[in-house]
Length: 301
Image 1 (tube, rainbow, N blue to C red):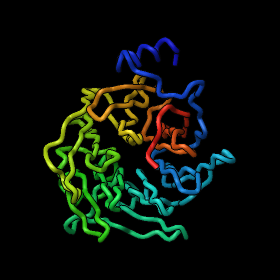
Image 2: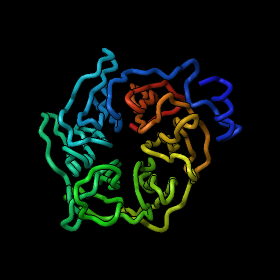
Image 3: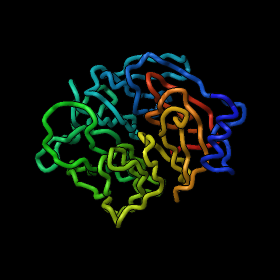
Image 4: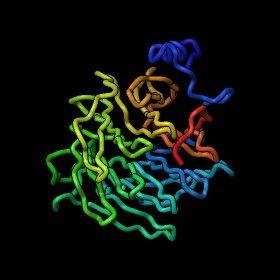
């Protein structure tokens, strides 16, 4: 992107916005042989796992720069999150070969199901995940692709408790997509990304993990492409993959929805994850590719 256009877009978001990138840092394409990249989970061993929705999970090793297959088939893995002890929780979507479940992969490679039904009905197409400090998993369950018969009429957000029970979390989202939790665990951020509306929601949570009240709309993208995946920084900023065309990129918002930074991406971005020794390296899945850039921000450890 031409520097003048990038400056103009950043100013359009917030005239006082500071650059997302660290001084001298440039966006780097690491790999571009995917079908449709998604997910992104920074592992305790210092590698990044990410999804290629063509039905595999890939591993990027920063020490060698190599991308290798970590799991294939993946059950149409989409969003993923790593546990502190090195297990991988995966939202497996719909379409041919899709698991339509939330699975967990143990360090020895064993894969087992954590949940695949709500009130006896099969999930639509698990899309994204967020894990809280109590081991509770939040999952978005829209349906974008796949012709398998649907059992659930609604597209909703669910919470999977450590005992395996599944509870619906009332978020008002019509087609929930990306999820993220505030650092204190008191707010669930939900991207409502469908034909009805394209907004970023902030849902207050009770200590038990239920919605504590009506959500707030932090950002309305109107007719534009809203947020797909997102994450949060250690100080609570929301870092989101959104937009298309010249507005495709990474958007940073304060917890009140105020936009503070923008980074253009050459392909339509789908998700983001912080990694590296200081959790300041932002990995971006977009189109067929995986990107990274060193930032001024710090992700949660």
